[in-house]
Amino acid sequence: MPTENNVGPAFSDTKASSPLPRDAPEGIVDDPSYKTGKNDEASVPVVDDTEPLPEAYQDGEADSDKQLERDEKEALDQDNVIKERTRHAKPTGTYQEPSDEQMGLME
Image (cartoon, rainbow, N blue to C red; front, side, top):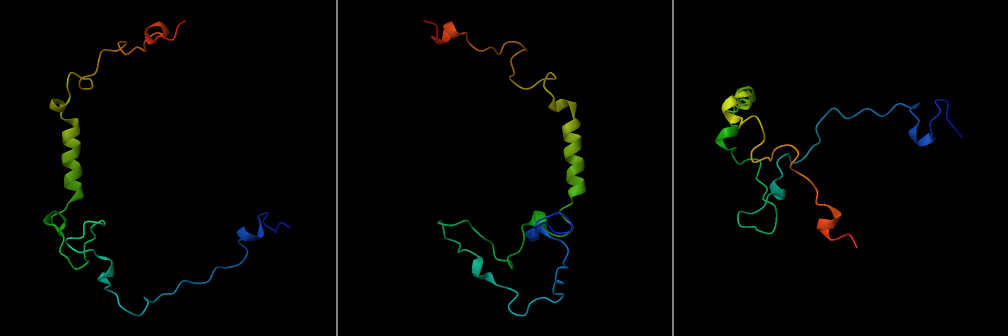
């Protein structure tokens, strides 16, 4: 039986949802049990949360705006364009499928 908003009972939005809790749960915040050992070759390596980041990701060093600006300049640099076409591409019209006779499909 349809509800007043013409959707099934599982999708009815007539009742309000319960509010989400505001406080963080009690307990251990730092749980390193997921990290892998240094010599564990059988699994994907997972780094501990307390391990320092590589230098490229340190605060103040990583600037995505600067990197984006460099990438845009590199993309617009005409020295990166080779004869205004894709490298090693054949001229237009030279890519042709072989005929049925060439493929041995004719009887």
